[in-house]
Every structure is written in C-alpha cells, then in structure tokens.
Length: 51
Image 1 (spheres, rainbow, N blue to C red):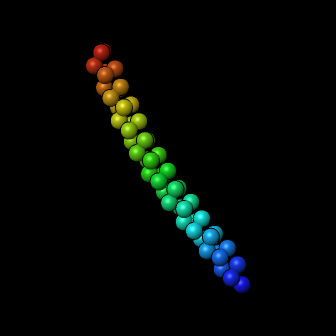
Image 2: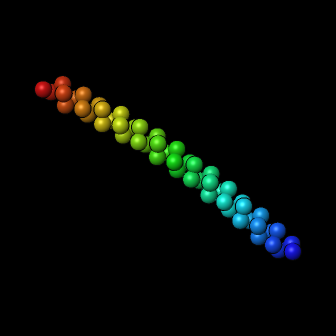
C-alpha cells in the first residue's frame, strides 16, 4: 500500500513540474511574439520613411 501512495505522489510531483515548465514556455512564447511584433513594426516604419 505504501508503494501505491509513493507512486501517486511521484506522479503528482511530475505533473506539477510539467505544469510549471509549460507555463514558463507559454510565457516565453508570448514575450517572444510581442518582441517580434515590435521589430516588425520598426521595419515597417523604416520602409515607409525611405519612400
């Protein structure tokens, strides 16, 4: 019975680790997307300035 509780605890701990990692990846992707949008906007402004 102890092994079942230990296994269940390890599964829960593993899921928590995956959840934290997934949250960090999603946040990094959102940040990267906004940075790419800013650079894209800068290139549009510079191409408009050249005529």
